Each structure stands twice: as C-alpha cells, then as structure tokens.
Amino acid sequence: MTKCLSVATILALISVYAFCAFAQEGDDYKDYVRVAEFIWDEISRQKELQDFQSAENAALNDYILQQERSYKAYMEEIERKWNEFVGSSDRRWVDYGEDKNVRSIVNFEEKAAPTEKPIEKPVEKPVEKPVGKPEEKETPEEEKGQIIIEAVVPADDPDAEEKAKELIANHIEKIFSAKNEARKNVLEGQVKTEAGEVVTSENVKKFVKEEVLPKARITPKLLKSKDGVERIKVSVVIPMVPEHLRVRAEQYLRSVRKYCKQYKEDVPLVMAIIQTESYFNPLAKSHIPAYGLMQLVPRSGGKDAYRYVFKKNQAPKPEFLYIPENNLLLGTAYLYVLENNYLYGIRNPKKREYLVIAAYNGGIGNVIKKVLKKYNVPEMTPDEVYVALRKEMPEETKNYLARVSSRKKNYLAWR
Image (cartoon, rainbow, N blue to C red; front, top):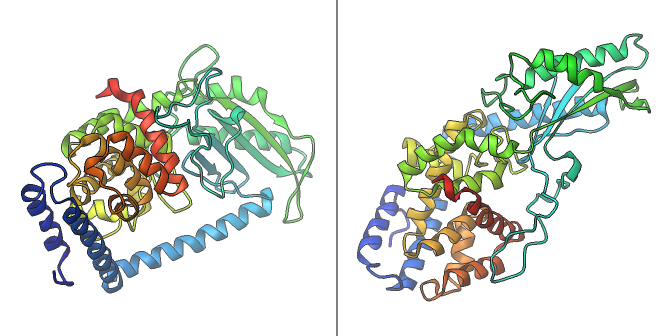
C-alpha cells in the first residue's frame, strides 16, 4: 500500500475489511492486525505531518505555551503566600480566590464502606494498588467527600480573623455558583444543612453564616510564608452528603444516554469510565494534561474525536472540554472511533470491551502492539483477553481496566 494515503482513504479501508474479511471472528486475523497497525501508523504519521504544517496547530502550541507560562506564574504567586501549591486533579477541584488569599479543596472521592472489599475478576487476585498518577499522593480517607476552605491573612492585621472569615464566606458563595469553566454549579445537590435542606446558591449565605463560620478555626501555629509575611490561617470543613458520587452521576445520565444512543455505546461502560476518570467532576484536570468528565487529551483522543464529530482537524481547547455536554459528546465519540477504526475485527463484544477500555487509557497503539500482535485473540476467551491485557499493559492501564470493569456493575440498572 502507498505510504501517502489521506486519513479519509485509510479509514475507508476499514469498511472493506470489516464487511468482507471478517464474516466470522478469526478469519484472516493476522491480516486484520496488520491492517489495524498500518492504519494506526499511517494516521499517526499523517497527524504529525498535519500538526507540523498546520497554522492552527501552531496557534494552539502558542496558546498552550502562554497558558503554561501564566500557570507557572500563578503557582509561584500562590507558593509565596501559602508555601505550597495545591492544584486541581482528576479527583479534586481546587479553586483560589482572585487575591489568592482563600482557597477551596473539594475531594470528590467517596469514602470506602467499612466492610467494602475490592471487586475483581475471578480469574485473578483483587487489585491492591489503586489507580493514581506518580506525582499525586492518595487522598487520606478522612478527607474524601469533604470541602476544605482555607484563608490566610497577615497576622499583624488587627482584624485578621474576621477578614479571613469574610474571605471564606464570599468564596463559599462562589463555589456554589456557576462561575467556573464548566458553567454550572459543580456542587449541586451534594451538601445539606443540619436540618437536611440541600444547599443552593439561594440559601448558601444563610448556611455559611449559621453553620459554617461558627466551626471555622485558626491554625495554632502562624504560617511563615516565603514572601516573608507571617499569616494566620483560618479553615473550615464542609462534609458532602454520603451519596455525593451518585448525585453527580445522575446529573449527567440523560446526556450519557443520548450520546450512547447516537454512537451505539453502552451506558454502564461510559458511566464507569467517567467515574474512573473524574468521579463525575466536570472541572477535573490531570497532569497529562487531560480535561473534564472523560479526561480527554486535546492533541490525541480529543483531536481524534473532534475530527470525527465536526469534520475539522483541530484540537479542542480546555475551555471547550470543561463544558460537560462537549466533553461527553467527544468522549463517547472517541470510544466509537476506537471500536470502529481499530477494533472492528474483534467480533466478541466482551473481548472488544476489555480492549477498548485498555485503549482509552493506555492508547490503541499499545493495545495493538502488546496484545493484538502477540496473542490470537479470536481463539481466546474474554477472561483470557482480560488477563493478557493485565499482563502486557502498563501498570496504570492494568488498574484502570480492573476499576472500570468492576464499576460497570454499579450502573447496569441505568441502561
């Protein structure tokens, strides 16, 4: 085959092989793998060439570089006051006030039930090591499902404590509003008053005055900041309702069903992926960086999905991916692209599901090279494919596969 095929021509090969060469699973499997690998290699080369030639991509690179510089300056400013920088992640939303004197840390992970045990495939031992990024520490169990609000004020200010409490009050009102990149109240339905009333943007001021500020406490030791100023730190903890994960999940179920119907994807699978990627936090951001509910990487999966959906070869910007509807649309479309562009030759739905889960996290190139080329997948059982993926894929992907497969069971009734 020629080495200068267009992406459209390459993808056109898929329909030919899908309908002619695979009447039964196992027919010409080696040919299928060669074609799938060729398609992956060619599309990768084309993307690199297009990225190099594209003025739009150059603009994106400039935009990302500018964002990185701004973010570095932002981090340094915070570190001068707080002696540390705590940023958002795929499981945590951190928001600082405009003057950087107050911050909120929302931990979206659920506390484990006292008797809860890891659910794992019966073919091997439960996963002991949770999914996590190398540079990110595990969230302490007692901090899961909590909102921590902290404020720092120079200690020589005679009204330091009152000013810190005022900062906290104003900031809580902000985080219970839609003034964020997702353009929605991310905490909707997830905090209640002592009387059991849901905290909303309408009653949050009363909630803060009567229930939050009375519990605010000053840290006994002064904070000796890097900028040379001694500050007091005032903090308070707001617990989220025990079922906060389910509350968030239900908010996105309608959209997930809509896009799953559009792209013929499985609702429980997509919900399990969202839980594993972001705990249903639309403002999630990982170190890669990946953004939003389904943690799309703009220049890889995000770009592939954007091209498929909008027929434009461009990478979506972070502000586009933070909007829940955009993220769910592209994330579901990307699952469709993985299945139909690369895994079309795997007829068994359970095998294909395991492969697509691994590809979503670890990359389709890894799945092709480490599993499809090394194993005769059509002759394997679904459990054997699962074990092969757990053996061959990177550690993060092994844990990711286990978690998504396990969590899917929680959403079977939501189809």
